[in-house]
Length: 85
Image 1 (cartoon, rainbow, N blue to C red):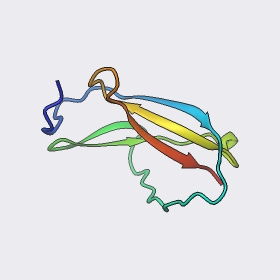
Image 2: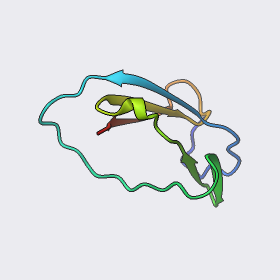
Image 3: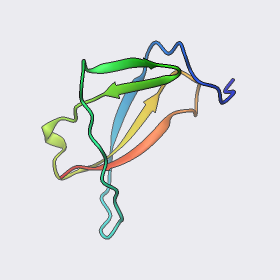
């Protein structure tokens, strides 16, 4: 059950990536890149986490859908769309 409170004992995440058609003229937002520390899941405390993930160089020139599952149950994945240049 999702209650909206902070997750303080997250032990794993699952990342899945699938291909996505790149549409022309779509808006985009620049994202900040943080890669300090070890790769994978880092517990920053107080319900804050950081997951470092390096995209393969083969993704250049493609668009992908990234789904992040933090173990909250079916249908609770977070989704982000990326265009790699």
